[in-house]
Amino acid sequence: MKPISTSVYTFSNLIEGDFLYVDKTAAIHELIRSASAQFFLARPRRFGKSLLVSTLKAIFQGRRELFDGLFLATTDYDWQPHPVIHLDLGAAAAQSPEDLERKLIYTLDRNATDLGITLQHKDSADRFLELVETLATRDGKIVILVDEYDKPLLGHLGQPTATAIQAVLKQFYSVIKTTESAQRFALITGVSKFAKVSIFSDLNNLTDLTMDPRTATLLGYTQEELETAFPDYIERLAGAIGRTRAETLDVLREWYNGYRFHKLAATVYNPVSVMKCFDTQEIRNYWFETGTPTFLVDLLRRNPLAPTGLVADESDFGSYDPRSPAALPLLVQTGYLTIKGAEGPLGSVTYKLGYPNREIEMSFSRCLAHGFTDLPPEEVTGSLQRLTAALREGRVADMLDTLKGFFSKVPNTITIENEKYYQTIFFTVFTLIGVRVDAEVSTNIGRIDAVVRTSAAIFIFEFKLNGTADEAMAQIHAKRYFEPYLDDGRPITLIGVEFSRQTRNLGEHRVETINAGQVRETPAPYGAATGTQPSPGEIDMREVARRLKARGIADAIITEVTGIPPQD
Image (tube, rainbow, N blue to C red):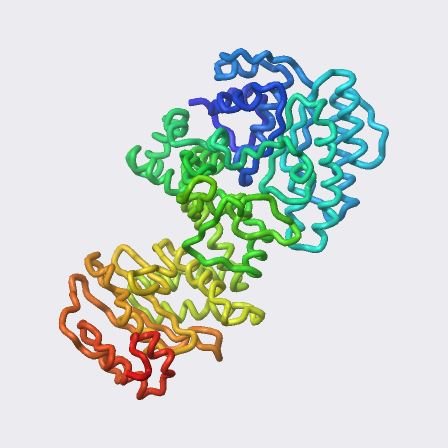
């Protein structure tokens, strides 16, 4: 077993240290074989961008000895050395334009020293241009590698300070455009593609590889690569967790696989998470260790998304302004959502999006639960434990009381009409306790607010913001929301809940249980309005309408629930 590393991101150090390296040089060869090219590639953090940049640096320095045994060494690549400018901006997060200028100059000066050049100009853009022109005159065609080009911007998304930071980067990166003729190769990597940064607004020849089939599996490990490169580690993990090899592969796939970077491409594993898993011999959440960027949670608090059924088209993944970033493409590019499917004609594809795997689902859900409710992490944990116990034992009242605790912490600046905000909390807390939850579930005659499924039971929720718990239960029956689940075999619990405008929280509720195999055949009136338990039969809609009318319910709501016009 070759040793694996979760902290070495320099190609030469991996090879010289005899660490395990999954050979990606076939795909790299496709990128470097042309006479000159300029590329951009966006990938989530901790996905191997720095290792890719380091590998390219070794190639263009002509260090062929490092590639013995790898695909690239078998090709006709000429291994001609080129001067390489390697700008790693991973540590260039800046509070101000002046701070950013200092960090850019420091990075340029380190490159200049390594290349035997002393720079004279004062500002970063002129210094960059001086470095490129001096190298090209002295040594010929150059290579420019920029790692994490957008790190200086990420801390300013949606903030007024973004404009000033953006202006510095626009001027700095314009050098890549103006010196194109001096370049043998250029690659810029980052998390996202921001408009009005000159590499996108000015570089006409820049090829975006982010959703290109040629590079869809360049970073990360495919299932075949995982099983071929790590067989001994898989066996060792299987022994540590007490599973068979096949079961262990299923667990690994559920937790760390699932990222798709082209609609037709194979999915890939997060390389850092799966390596940490093999190193520690434990299945757990490694993504969470580095935290979720707070700007994502802040962005979603301002513009919450529906928790399920997310879709996007190709235009959504173009560049966008960091002063007003769009949540959906940013969640995809940062790795919290990925392509789960695609449909539509060529040139007009619609993507279905979702969490790539269990690790990301748990990481982001925990951050959302804390960020959307302002509950301290320790209170979130305690509440989730109570919710788990109540759900397992079928104690609906206790389950709803726990949910009230989450909703009670929603900031008072959030209006009750912001349905997606409350949906996100509901969806998130059930996700965190490990049960399947679906929101806005479409049936042939309606849409269920939420369906929660455990191994032992199914819970169907209907919430009424402008109505009562009785009306919510009546709608469940009128729309026959339970029907798709009657053949499942698990008992079905129907839960109608009032969402109170006054308390901004859950109000009264009604509960009914349908036992497994129970079929509704004989008509029977719905009896919740009188406090009696309803019979499991077809609903007499006129009787429902009469009872609701007697309780003073508005005609419009009665028609919505029963389908019977007011005049009837």
